[in-house]
Image (cartoon, rainbow, N blue to C red; front, top):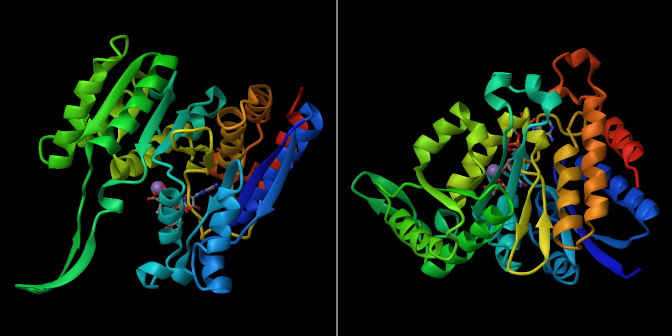
Length: 358
Ligand code: NAD
Ligand code: IPM
Ligand code: MN
């Protein structure tokens, strides 16, 4: 079979721990399904700052550009938190998304039946929840001009939020297309009662919606959306929103599933190339202790196999293996009701590997 190239950038904190489990899963799908992958590891984030003096070394970027897909763990940690902007791991993350043209971040939040009691919410509220946050990833306040200046009361800080119609239209079209393939419901989330960028966003959404008459569209203000996600999560299907709102709402949506350790993501551009990463961060509080839940990263790998390579048999098999292991009652501590029975990162990875069936 054709050899597919995967760049692996595991990063900091729990990044290397969860990526190692996803790599075991990748190897098993190779054996079972006859696919062939070549992985190349590269330094990224805090570890790259320490070893190369920059969070996103040129070499790492070219490893990613030469690959068919990228698997990413997480970056950041207290060690680099007071560094200047250019020497922050998070700046490397924004840089790689921008450099690879990954403007669309797909974050599915699916409630596994057997995990309903792992959430802090009531099980009956969660019943049937299966939604997808489509987050704009390379625009908005994250990428606007930022500066300090002297004002009336001394130092001031400015972050600007800007969006143009091209940036809005391409993400909105992707969201409509995803909605067409799901239950044909799209919620566009903005703050059009206050923000000019949101008013433009809404204008574009309304114009583009004419091309998708089969999709039922609602506009929801972001504050209301944050509330409705907890009140009636199952009524959402696809949610499309700008960069920062999507960042915040997807962490909130994670708690519907029981833990941020469950939430996978795919960062895509116009084509099949993508960067696949868990939604969570480097979790310095549990790093290096075999405590992290690797499922978000394993499910991100499944998204890669499906979206970049079209290997849906392998993707389905990985997702089924995760379901089975959870149905069998195995839990990492973040999703365990009885924490004394929780298993570790590696044990969870091994169980998933063993449960993959052709
Ligand atoms: P975080 O997501 O790292 O952790 C938040 C909480 O969730 C912590 O209590 C952590 O232990 C827990 N958690 C996260 N992932 C888990 C997993 N797989 N299994 C079990 N528990 C898990 O967010 P934070 O603490 O706000 O940020 C820590 C660092 O990570 C910061 O430097 C931040 O900038 C960075 N960060 C990076 C990414 C990324 O690389 N994509 C995303 C978010 C945050
Ligand atoms: C995420 C993270 C990043 C973001 C940070 C670390 C830059 O929170 O991937 O959700 O805000 O996009
Ligand atoms: Mn985030």
